[in-house]
Length: 223
Image 1 (cartoon, rainbow, N blue to C red):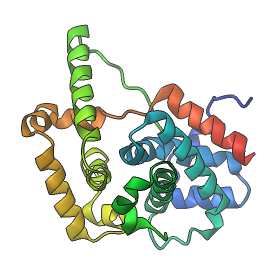
Image 2 (image 1 turned 90 degrees about the vertical axis):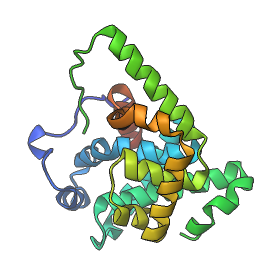
Image 3 (image 1 turned 90 degrees about the horizontal axis):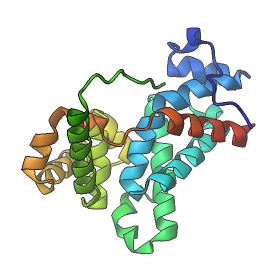
Image 4 (image 1 turned 30 degrees about the horizontal axis):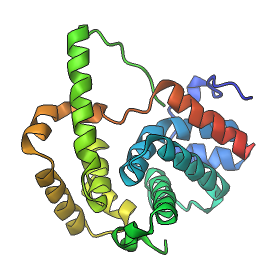
């Protein structure tokens, strides 16, 4: 089994996505790890917003990376690599939804046809427990949103993507993004959203061993 240790020189971590893609295409396969660690959390968040299941989201992420790797030469740079990769993950997630629950087909009709580090935590145990409870409340409330709203909310509010990039990833209009985001905020109880505030970006974490596991499994599949 492949080790989960970092496979690339730290000097390469600052490379742009486009440079990493170029070098991977030219044979430096190990550099693909940079892209995985750079976007693991985003892909986990967006795929989980569609399937609402952690383990299934992990499987989808692996499929998305393998598909992206296999078609890397088709990336033409007309959109940012991060957008191209996110769209692949979204396609994979919606394809999975269609296979396991055909009743959700209407909610995905618009899409048919188509590195991380730990931060030292010096908070006291009571504060850590409180923050953990807030995250659980937010995640439970989020999972109750309608399908069409979860992805928009995740990309805009949790991942901090722009309206334009969100619209491109989901292949809907910017006006639709704004409308769905507004409705998602309305459906989430105002007091919960206000209470969580800036802690929202700590929800749906994808760090440490989970990140390593995705990297290892993808390399096994493309190796």
